[in-house]
Image (tube, rainbow, N blue to C red; front, side):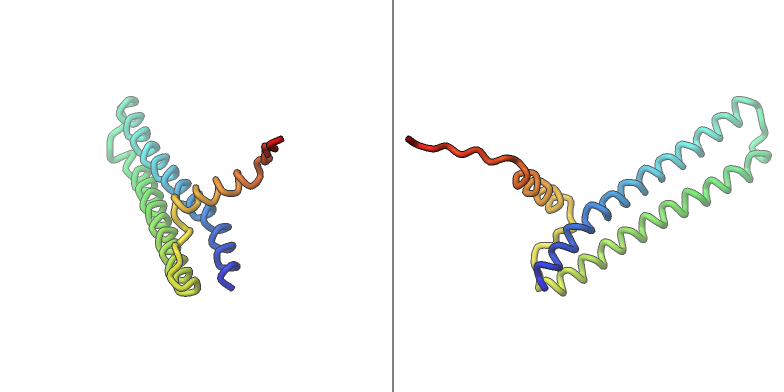
Length: 119
């Protein structure tokens, strides 16, 4: 059972990290869009009151994006709790360090081994 838990955690780890990074990218993109919208509104001389509905919609999008990031982080924490419970406190693999270590181990395993024969 413990080996299965390690395998599941190893498969989920890159997915969780990718989701967290994608949400960060989306947060930055929406924030940039808000800033660009305000800059363009000013450049064309539109009154702030006229552009306010658009800015409010974008603000809601930003809030939802940040909230979704928080939910993924909470799921990450839940995975950690479940893992520690099932794996009896083993080192939790759902961390960047352990994902990188596992990736390096897999890469080493796939690399052809050279042997030196003493003659």
